[in-house]
Length: 370
Image (tube, rainbow, N blue to C red; front, side, top):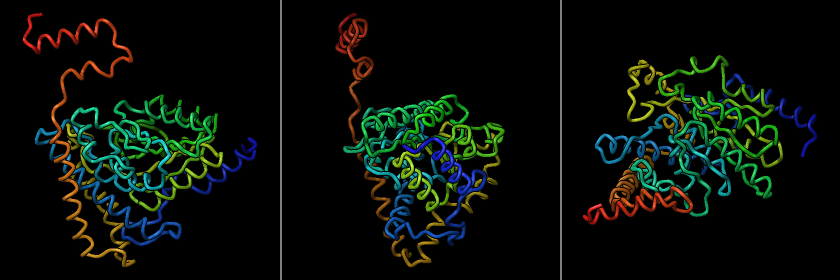
C-alpha cells in the first residue's frame, strides 16, 4: 500500500492530468482521431462496433415488444451504447458487475443472454441469473442502492486477495442519493478496488442535470473523497474503454477507486412509461445529439482504416436480425411460471404464516373450499 502522502500526491497528479471539467476525447464526431489509440487493437475496435450495433437493434426490438404487450415496462438505452459496451469490454471475467436497470448493453457484452434480459422485463426470475463463470448482479431498480453493494464486494475482494474489481453502473440521478456519497466515502477511506461508472445522460427522468446539482460536473465530486475523477465523452468508445482500463489497473495496484463520468444522452424516454416530450424539446435535442451518435462515428473511423465495409455492414445487419429474433423466440417460448413461485425466495426458511397461505392457494387452485 502506498504511503498516504505519496498516494494523495499521485491521485492529485492523475486528477490534474485527466481534467475534471473537460471531457476526454479520442474519437471525434466525424470519425477522426483526437489522440493516439495505439493501445486499442483493431480487433477490439471492430468488436466494439459489432456489440454496439447489436445492442441498438435489441433495444429497439424490446421497445416494440413492450408496445405490443409482450413484455413489461422497459428502460431504453439508445444513445448510450458506447458508454456501456466499451466500459464492459475493458473489464475481466473475474470482475463484479453491478448494473442499473438500463445497462443491458454492458451485461450482454459480458455474457448475459439477450433472452434473459427480455425475461427480466417479463418479471421472470430467470432474467436475473448471472451466466456461468461471471459475476453479474441483478439489475438494480432502486436508485443508487447497488453502488453500496459494489463497494461491499470490492471490500470482500480485498480481504480474499482476489485480482478483481467491482464496477457500479448508474445515472446522473443516482448521484443525488445519499447511497452514492456513502459509497464513495467508504471506498475512499479503505482504498477499495471499485469503479463508479456514471452515465450522465442529462436527465433524472424529467429533471435536467442543471436542476440536480450546482456542481458543473459529476467527476469533480471525486475531490471530496480524495479519489480519482475522470470525465469522458461517453459517446466516444475509445475514450470510455481507456478510462475504464486505466481505472481497473489503478484499482489493482492499490490506488483505490475511480469515479468516471461518461457524458452521454438517452435518445428516447426514461422508460416506456415516460413521455419525454413533456419536459424537453424532443426533436431539437435528438437532432443535436444525433451528430454525436456513438455508432456512426465509430463506423466512420473503421471505414477510414479499411476495417469495415458496406459488405461487412450488410452481413452484420443480417446476423443481428437473426440473433435478436432468436432471443425473442427463446424468451417468449418459455412456459409461464407456476403461480406458486410467488411464495418462493421470500425467506430462507418459510415461516408458518406463509406456509398457511401457500396451502390456501393450493386448495383454491384445486377447487377445494377454503
